[in-house]
Structure formats: C-alpha cells, structure tokens
Image (cartoon, rainbow, N blue to C red):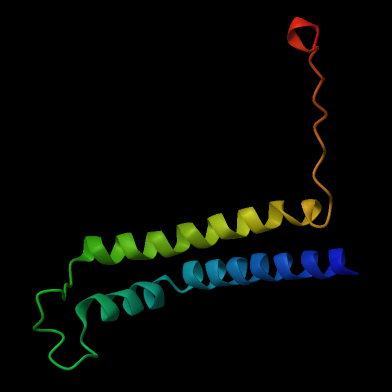
Length: 103
C-alpha cells in the first residue's frame, strides 16, 4: 500500500509539471505577459520606478524559458522515479580481506 501511495504522489508531481508545461507553452503570450508584469514591478507601490524593475524583453524571455525548462526537467525526473519507489536498495557485499601478519 505504501509503495502505491509513493508512486501516486510522484506521478502527481509529474502530471502537475506536464500540465503546467503544456499550459505555459500553449499560452505563451500569457506566460511572457505574467513574467513581464512581474519584472516591471507595475503592481507594487512605486515599483515601476524602482531600480530593480525592468522591461527588457531578453529578461522576460529568459524567465519564460527558465520556467518551461525546469517544469520539463521536473516532469522527466518524476516520470523516471515511480519504478524505483518502495524498492529496497541493493546491498553491496564486500569481500573480507585476510588479516595482515596472520592476525
């Protein structure tokens, strides 16, 4: 039962990442728009005048690619993991060495 629960939780993370990835790619204008609003700091009081605010399209594109790339990476890692959930790690047997000086 615990193994099935672990697999379900890991697959939940994978599906979250996949659905988020699909949504971000299909609504690319919305993704870049949300990042542009965040980086321009227009929603904060006196945020647009701050030295940290930027409307640079390269920063917006880099942020969107960062989000999409890491969602893809999270989905790949999570989809590779369920087969390993709940399985014990193999035990590596060490050969015993003969004692030095007959001890």
